[in-house]
Length: 324
Image 1 (spheres, rainbow, N blue to C red):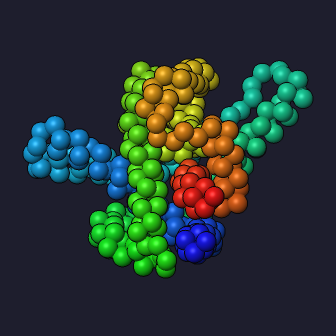
Image 2: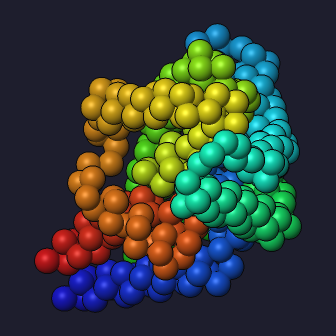
Image 3: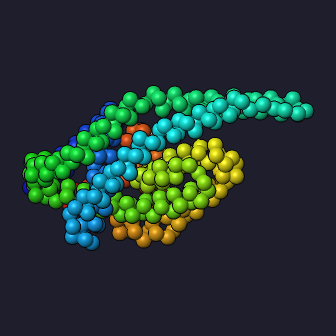
């Protein structure tokens, strides 16, 4: 009985830590989001470093691969917004300059004019929203960079002091934390390979379709792969924007075939093979968690949805089933 009570005290502490985390994710989403993304990126960047180091046993080549990946990410961030703004502006101007010539029915002319007005309003709304959150995004990006730089020292500090978070059974609690972050790390490292394959196929398709900024959009696809379902929608928006502004409806149709094809290949071919031993969570549970947390916490909710599911599963194993 005493052992059960001791474990229960630590279980209560773990729940308090979890609730505090969700509270801060709700109140200061950009800070929590930056910390989580910094942690994600530190794992993502360690993949090419570890791979090159293992294959070549030369640390300087591993460092070069690390710097190269960082350069690609920075280039994507710097180039994405100006290019997207330019495409939005071009579409906005095209919608304003569109004139109806010929003897068309009045109802058709009115419908097209209304469509022009709606397109202009939507594009202006997109620009206003982006401009509105731009200062917060810049702050978040700076915080991500700081987190990435200091993540190793943070991990070292936590590894030495994680036991103080538990009052009765520190070793058991330490094992719980290590296994939880091990599951998250395993998921992210597996997703690196899945997202890389999808991004490569998407970038190749964009190049064949002559859609501009294929590399930038490909890297965006890679990053979007870490946010199941939602990431696909977010990365697809600028793709359709670029496709429509350069090739019209024909490019949009071909782009749709490309995205559907890559998504289906990821869902049925290489995705399950790579991640089958990592998550072991039902797809409906994943979707439900993403949309529920996304609705309550916004972007950061989507970001932490799968780690939260992994936490719930690990907590159930360690502090619920263990007590029975």
